[in-house]
Image (cartoon, rainbow, N blue to C red; front, side, top):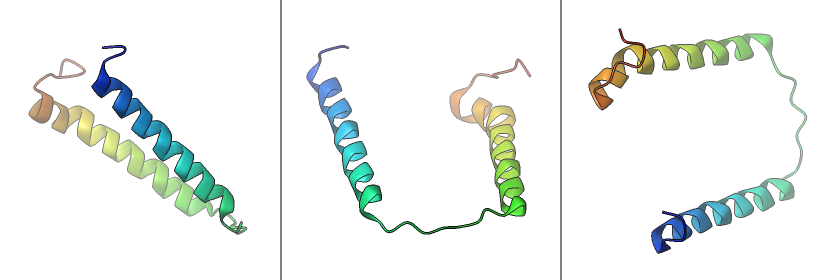
Length: 70
């Protein structure tokens, strides 16, 4: 797959997207935001829940393979 046209186009598109996003982020004004512990905990719990849902339920239904042999 290395060197094929579609691979080069895809990787180039990702590189271009990353460059544009980086330049856009650098031009924005910086806003100081104090993180809240409750929001951090909610984010971690949401991530764990999404992982568990995909690993134990959706993976078998969508891909057809039980990732943990369950």
